[in-house]
Image: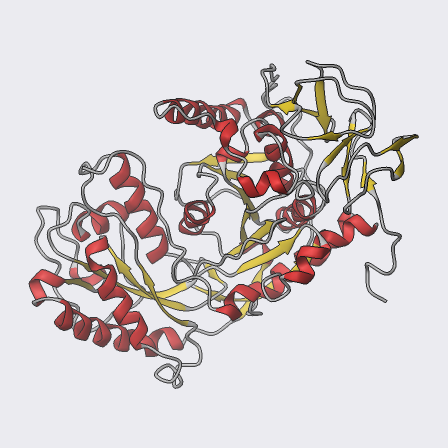
Length: 532
C-alpha cells in the first residue's frame, strides 16, 4: 500500500492555532464546507491548491498569520471562507524583534555510525562524485572549454569507468570589471571553489590571455593547486602577478599564447587525457555522514512548499546536523521577512549580526535600482498561492530545520563550520546554487511546488515535490514526493526518507536531473556591480 493510500486525504491545512487562515490541500470549489480550526466554513469562491482561505473574520489593516507568523496586512475586510491573495493582502510594514541569540536550541541527540560511500580527497575533503573540470577564467574562453569537454564522449571515457565525466565550467564574466574589486573577488572565489571542489578529481584552467580576471591572480589569491602532478604542464602566462611554484601549479592554457581556438582545444584535450588515469584511480570508501555538506534551495515554490517539502527538508537537515555534518541555507532575499526566526537561533549575537548585515546590504543594493524585495515572489509563485515575500520567506526558512545557526558566509566562501549555516546568495536559483556548490556543498536538495527542473555539475541535486499532482505530472524530474504530507503522512516520515535518499545519492545513486543530463548550463556566478 502506498503512503498516500494509507492516509485520509485532507481538504485544507491549518498550520498554527494563531493562524486566521488555512491552506488548500486540493482544488476546492465554491460552496464546499470545510471543518477547520474547530469551526465550519463555507467557501465563497473556488480556491486552488496551495492558496489561502480565511477561517475567521479579518478586518481591513489586520495582520494575516500563517505558521503562527505575520505574512502581511489585509487591504479589505475578509470573511470566513473567502480566498486570500494579492487582491486583499499586501506585505505591509511591521516591526520584527530579532532577539539575537536568545533562543539557541540545545544540541540534538547525535546520530552515530551513519556513513556514505564517497571519495576521500588529499587534504581530507569528501566527494560524492568524481569529475574532471575544464574551468574558463573568462567568457572569451568558454567555447574552448566546451569543445574540450565535449570531446570526452561516453565512448571515449569507456576505459575510465571511475570518472563521472568531463565538465566545462564556463560563464559570462571575467572582464569589464574592476581589478581586485568586489565582482572580481566574488568570481575568483566561485571559480576556485569549483576547481577545488571535492567532487572534482582534477582540473584545467583556460583563459584568453588579456582578461581582467587573470589566471595568475586567481591561482595566487585562492591558493590553487592541482591534485597530483601532471607532466608537461604549460607555463602560466605573465600577467604581472606573483608566480606560482611549479610544483603546485595546475595546468593552465592561454589561447593567445597557444595560437587560438584549435590549438588550445588540442592542448586541452591532451591535458585532460593525462588527468584521466589519475582521476579514474579514485575509489569510493566508507566516509562518516559528518562529511556531508548539504546545500538547500527552493525554486518554483507554491503555497504548500512551506507546508510539505521545505519542512521535510528541515527534518533531513536536522538529521545531517545530528550526524555531525553541515546544512546550508541560502537565498537571502527569501530569508527577508523571516530573518528573526534565525537570529534567535544564532549561537552568538555576532553570528546574528552577520545575517542582519546581509539583509541591510540587500535593502541598500536593491534600493539603488528602485527595486523592493517584496517584488520577489514570481508570477509562478503567486499562481501557486504565495502572496508576499514574508509568506514566501517563512516557508523557505523551514528548509533550515530547528538547530542553532552556527555561521553566516559570503557568496561562494568556503564552508568550514559544522551545523546549520547560511550563505548570502540571490534568490534566483542558478547563481544561488552556484554559490553553495562553490562553497563546498557535496549534495544539493532542491524543493519545488510548481516544478522547477535543475541540476548543477559536479554536485548531485535531489528534487522534492511539494504536491502530488505536480509530482505525478513531472515524475521524470522529481526524486521524492512530499505531497504525501497533504494526505496525512507525517512530515517526519518524509524527512527521514529524504535523509536516506541523501546518503544514497552521496554514495553514487544518480538523481533524476543527472539521468536527464542537467548541469552543464546552470553554472552562473553572481555578478555584482557594473560591467565596464
